[in-house]
Amino acid sequence: MEQRTRLHCLLILSLFIGFILKLSTADGDLTLLSRGKAKQEQIEDKVFWITGASRGIGEILCKQLASLGAKLIISARNEAELERVKSQLVGKHAPEGVKVLPLDLTAGEESLKETVMTAESYYPANGVDYMIHNAAYERPKTSALDVTEESLKATLDVNVVGTITLTQLLAPLMVERGKGHFVVMSSAAGKTPAPGQAIYSASKYALNGYFHTLRSELCQKGIKVTVVCPGPIDTSNGTGAGTSAQKGSFGKRVSSERCAELTIIAATHGLKEAWISDHPVLAIMYLVQYMPAIGYWIMDKVGGNRVRAAAEKGNTYSWNLLFGQNKKKAA
Image 1: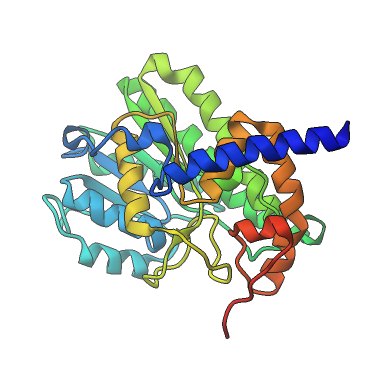
Image 2: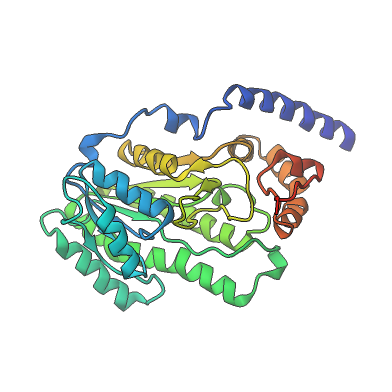
């Protein structure tokens, strides 16, 4: 019986891989890619507040949104880096009109409340139209049993507690205006098992659960939510990583610019969820979503191999992990 089940899994997997190969140029889910370009009218003169804006995808989002005529509030802990980003922005309201607002998501509710009121005061006629939750905390890959209490608390404080607290403070003001849009930079690790990233994955699953629930509660009051789930992203522009990718685990990646572009498309078209990734991660996301028995079977085969690949600085995003192969990174 077990052998028959295994053969069925392999057959379905081979058919699925054949389908995926026909879509080999895809770097996002089919719904997202079908939307075409971003809606300009949903961006120009709208107020976008972006956290984690000093590097990585956050920095690229700032540049693309500024060029499309958005009004920006940019936040991160490092004010000097925010000023650097601001100086490089070009657009209808940039750089002069860009507001720099330092933010530490772990500062506590009272501090975050003051930050929200400051953000709202910048554009009193509008308030914040889009809140892009991009800030995230991530540590190098390690096995689930090797996670320290310090790492656990640090990850959850930023990725979950701080992000949700900021939302709870801002959302009532949006409800009063009858409009507002939260764009949440989650991760493929919030949709599928992520061996070597158990706590990071848990934090992203938590965000997905909270924000999809928030939307269902507030959608009739004018509040929209778009959850974006990127896989490995190339942040080789030197600005640092802001996704589930780590510098030590090389492989085919979507560029930061493309990730930002697709995120803006997803938001302006009001998509509830969007996946951004090359294969094999995108293929695994489809499998876990639509064929969970097979998707989880593959991840069970990959799990231990992926943790070992990370320890050896190998490729943690390769089909070879399914067969126990790990190609080391060149020195």
